Length: 324
Image (cartoon, rainbow, N blue to C red; front, side, top):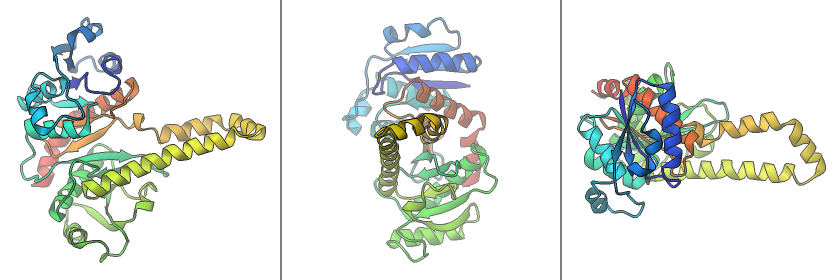
């Protein structure tokens, strides 16, 4: 197995990527890593046999346009994706801008035959502990009903292969549970999903149920999905912040927090994005993982673990079969 790791595009620079690559190489010594970035920042990786440094003198910025991304052929992001295009690696990880990474992936990596639009899939932590896949979460501003059906099939296959769900429950994010709810596109998507024999469709789901953990795969258009994802993240962060302020406001609260410390840390870990690893660009012929822009070494390592599992289980190959 060969994986390309973009070391330069994250908000925290190359340091957390270097640390994560060291840890990954220790755990998976037979996986070859091609780390793209400025070689003078990657010298700590030179002595590791399974790691190859690919010098890249440029960085794709969050503000770069489609044309700007295309022109930056010497950037760490584009070099990593070009290796995937040439079949030199099986998967790619980057902490770069979601828009830039998606644009570059669309430009340089082939889509699975029959997939009209690729999408970005996030795995949500939930109340029940059951991971819920949400897609699309921002790769596309608008989608058709047919595209949502494709997302549902890909999400269901991922849930089976990677998350080991025997018969994943699939729902459509909508403004109500009834089958006639939503605009014309969502009503059409409901019908297509209901008639699709490749998925276990359970109907519409409202936003307030998103983090319950009752559903395995939730499909939506990229605009609504991005808002839902960020609203959920914001709510979780504010809830933890409010809980901390409330507990430490009084002496009684501080004593209670001391006794509840293990449970509070477990709750924080359950809703920590760093443990998820990253979001997946679904629909490409290579495993592509987008880690959070502010990823530390733990988050980068888990993103590498995610792309490793994708390749090891041949999720892309089996997805091609499922989409036929």
